Image 1 (tube, rainbow, N blue to C red):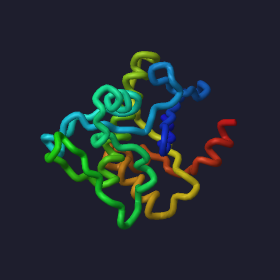
Image 2: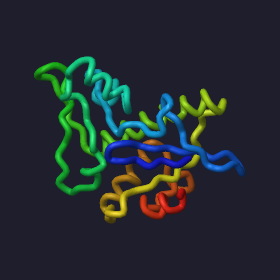
Image 3: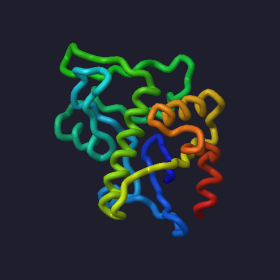
Length: 173
């Protein structure tokens, strides 16, 4: 399973055995917005949220922008990255680090991918991930991205984090 966690959109692909890789469709689209919307934060450790197009639709339906987070990858690995305030009402909020929100977001995207794979392929298990990263990522950003995937249970042989976006795109084309 491959994931290109983008600043604006995330694209995923999968490969079975000797078949050619295929882009994963999310509700007919080849990518999913890299966005997360928090529905409820009463339990900081188990917030309710939606990702992708569902996150953007919630904002459009409810006019509630304070619970929508986007462009998170830009702050990943920054030493002094600000925390993100997620509001539940006017005065109830929870602070999350960029890594924590990225872990929730990527985890939600992987859940969407599993559902899509189950619907289209009959199996939704993701055992190994190849993840790309921006060419501009340095050691601290790459380490932060690795910690995000590690928090989701992908590390060691189950995570390949060796390709920046440029060679991955060239390989595809």
